[in-house]
Amino acid sequence: MGKKRYWVIFLLLTGVGAGVFYFRRPDYQGWLLAAEKPLLTQLEDAAKFYLQGEYRRAEAGFVEALKTAQANDVAANEKWRELPINSRRRVLPARIFADNEKTQKRDGIDYFKPRISEAAYGLALARFGELQTRYRLNLADADGFSPPPEELKPALDALATGLAISPQSESLRLLKAEIFAKCRRYGEALATLDEVLLISAKSAEAYNLRALIYSSPAYLVDRDNWEINSKKALADWEKATEFSSLNGTKLPDPFFNLGMYYATPPEGLPLRADDADRAREYLTAYLKIVGNLDGDASPNAEIAAAALAKLPKN
Image (cartoon, rainbow, N blue to C red; front, side, top):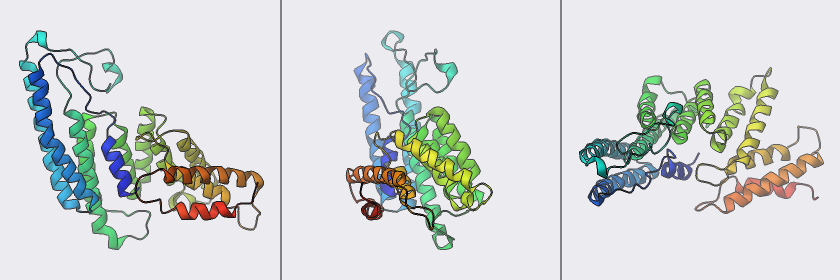
């Protein structure tokens, strides 16, 4: 997943959103907005450092943003409790966190809790980015690496901080699963993806990442189960094409992978007509999706276009 994609997910993060609250005391709402302004600046500055590859500076920025968000959360609740009862609104949490909370209401405000999760997400990204940079020269291949558990712990701790605030967050769990997968801890990655799919059975990102794991060398090298794992990967990629990503668009990767799979016949065999049709469908959809993306074109766009041109005409 590229840095641009990380940034898109970072903007969405927990799926919680700060929300808009209407209060009978405009001074309280004004305080919330005033307290949030410097916090947003901290988050934006830290994100810029991350996108520039300055992971240590990004980590320091997200640490400060996390502290600010946590302090603001405490202050917001204290001010809320100080309001006269008749000027409060009893509100549901910003998101239902567990089944036993569906019928419960509570006093207080959750305005800064999504910001805590955002800062924790960014902190995990920065710490893992720094770890990858440190191990770059020792990478055996581009598929992953195996840092000692104690070195991975700071990034996982940051995610745990976010999940303690937003237990149902898809984005935090997706990042956790991707970190495990990149560190070749596939069992933990798959277990985390199971959690994501329990929260949202329509998570395109979860299906796509699970397909990448099942199609990885670690799974396909097992000759006894490679056909089973291949079928699992194809099924998950097909699922991923059915649903939208967290930012509301289609993920391009599953379309590319399916298109290339059907465009490449087994060695020594001709391309079947129905496989050519399916390859054409997926590759055309892939090129349309990446063509609508902002910024640089996908590095696989040329490969997809070349494969599409080689397919037999209808």
